[in-house]
Length: 214
Ligand SMILES: [Fe+2]
Image 1 (cartoon, rainbow, N blue to C red):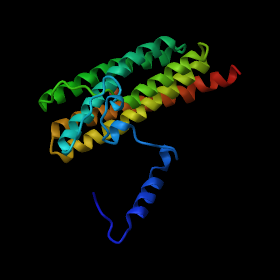
Image 2 (tube, rainbow, N blue to C red; image 1 turned 180 degrees about the vertical axis):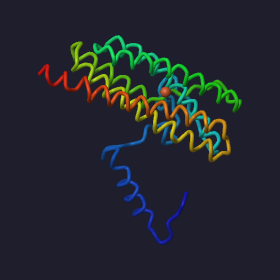
Image 3 (cartoon, rainbow, N blue to C red; image 1 turned 90 degrees about the vertical axis):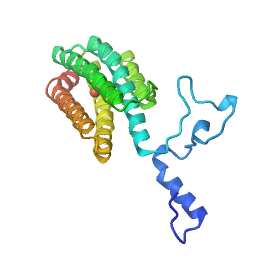
Image 4 (cartoon, rainbow, N blue to C red; image 1 turned 180 degrees about the horizontal axis):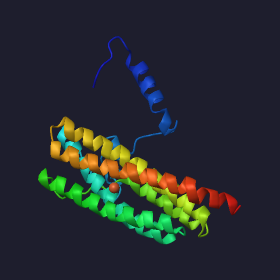
């Protein structure tokens, strides 16, 4: 841990609490994050307690998260395409679903090249975003309002993926893995293009129709 000279531990702790303010005043790490081990403090089913102490291991773990993200998203985009009413939006979701499957395969290729094991990290942030999208589908009727909600959910996903692949491409080039960096950079560009396409559909078609429908 980096020590800031002359600073008392209590002050450091107070500063740390402030820097975690965005997580809410009541934020408390989960037991498995606090290093507490007991039968009742195990991570949720499917989660493996792990420890990472090398940058390359972290890169591999993030790639495994990305594989999980793409698999969850491919399933969600199929449902979102069915739930969409606007033909252009439906087509955009279907195209992005195909891209998502291709991204998953590319991440798999990178993992194989790195000789990474089959370990799967289920990405819980993505799970939550997908759950929110399902909730919105459940509380809106088919039509432009639901389409607007679907775009909002899909763009949350895109921004999450942009952050994920931006980091991964940077990690790869920091590690001198140029082929990985190129492939991850290409995926990043696809995610950005999808985000822009969704903005165009929202601003040009779906949002005005939703407002007009009252
Ligand atoms: Fe993707």
